[in-house]
Image 1 (tube, rainbow, N blue to C red):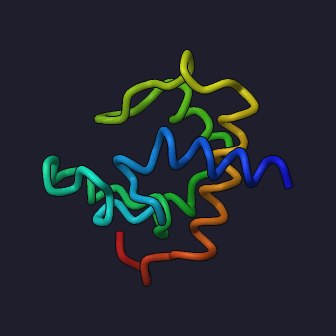
Image 2: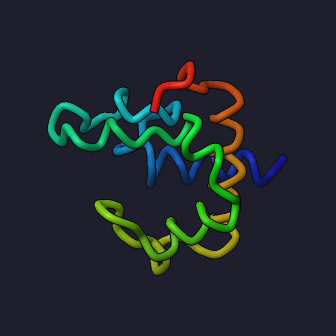
Length: 98
């Protein structure tokens, strides 16, 4: 399906550096350089509790350490990423870790 393929492509390009390829922040490429980043696990239960719209909004306008990507990621690509994050949650839920 296009949305999942596109979501994976965009997630790996824009999100994985901080959130990890599986959504587990401790596995992120820059986790050793920014110790606070691994605390944010998009595959875990906290983000699972967020609505799709909330995740979309965080991608668009940012939050805390996360910059806004509204001007770099299109509307449709943001939704594709949300769908891909839901897939990561199903595949790689970090055993209840936050």
